[in-house]
Image (cartoon, rainbow, N blue to C red):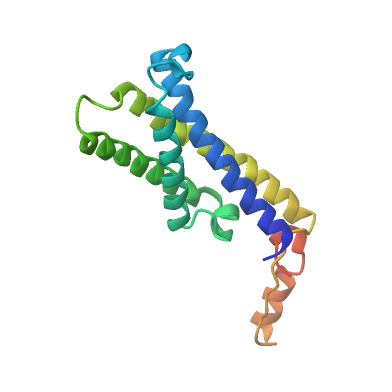
Length: 172
């Protein structure tokens, strides 16, 4: 994997983490008020730790579902249903954590729904932005894959001619 692919993958992972944390933190701040989210607020010991755990869990789930592979970074619309699935798994994980920790409900249902929707929205927006970066790098020839075509008959030659522009197809 080349340096540009690595930079693209690291950038996508970093913005995914920021998107997840921002969605959950903004939802908590809007639901309970921003003063409750500071160190002396009533949300401090529980919600920030929960947000970090959920962000780590969602990144692991996204990795397990293959959303940081080449096909997902340049594959178009196929990655968005997977992002919705990953965000939904995160929601279910928060519900399970809340249930198993016992006591009064650990998290607000309003916060759950708002953070779930915000996570989906911010992850999809992040992916759209990184897709544009990836397509631009592809047009510049920075992220190109080498392809070996076996066979010198008409079909092999036609495929080679079609893929001969790495700026358009990302293959050389």
